[in-house]
Image (cartoon, rainbow, N blue to C red; front, side, top):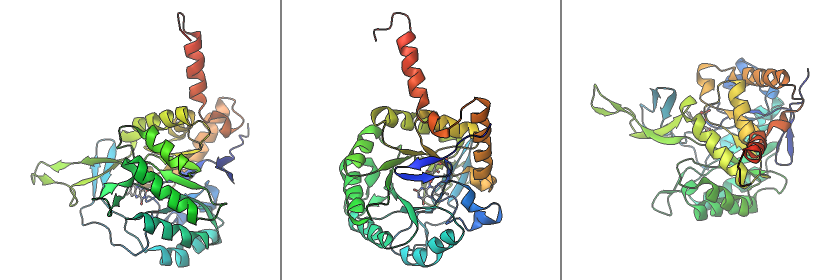
Length: 321
Ligand SMILES: Cc1cc2nc3c(=O)[nH]c(=O)nc-3n(C[C@H](O)[C@H](O)[C@H](O)COP(=O)(O)O)c2cc1C
């Protein structure tokens, strides 16, 4: 059975729902030796900042049971080199580019948005707000509804109206629905979730932190239940807002789980490091899983678990509903 895999990033249609996750595939070039990057829904690029950056000191990766810690920081060439080199390359390959941006001040995000507005071939912008705000004692934008909204409002005001803006949320908050709501109120067309969780490991031989930066972001299978919970809660509260889901996706079944929670598309991150062909494989597996369940359109499973959950509540004997 052929499954209709077409998916949406707000008003933009993608051929299928499997994307790379920001920071895990550069700007797609390295992956192109393994598969045709135009085959997946989109390439989400590493967060780009205004100026080139060298990232944080090494060691900056550590394996943990079922996950990985990284403290790479936002290493990258800066927006000028990105626009000159990386974006045209993606376009020449026929790939769709979701450009991730990051800044240290609201003004930097606004400037990045303005530069992208003039560029050809930006499918959507993902705003990485898990960055310290240098104008507010290093408070992470994504952890404060007001600061998160200020960034999204500034980006929305400067970016071309037809480019969807996705706010990428951090799970390291008490109430992710409150942050999601303020981003949407500030003009976000969609939400990406989740970024890594802050973690740490100590080497019991050297008796010191493993990462030079001491703390790092935890990703991989260990965080999938957190991703499912965040996507579920936000979709429950804001059912019409498209979600790019990510966090620990390794298989087509994992992607299906995030979609059932409410993700319209799914990004694959850490899995790419040990299987560079993870995206096309997961896409194939997802299609097989949908076909084996007699589901004709991938879009039909988005948030579906909520409906069966409601139906189960209604059916439960003695339910007050
Ligand atoms: C090495 C590494 C670098 C990352 N860099 C970025 C980044 O530049 N911008 C961003 O928004 N997220 C970044 N992330 C977070 C991922 O995009 C993703 O949200 C997270 O890893 C959860 O997905 P996963 O478990 O599939 O990796 C990075 C993750 C890893 C592992």
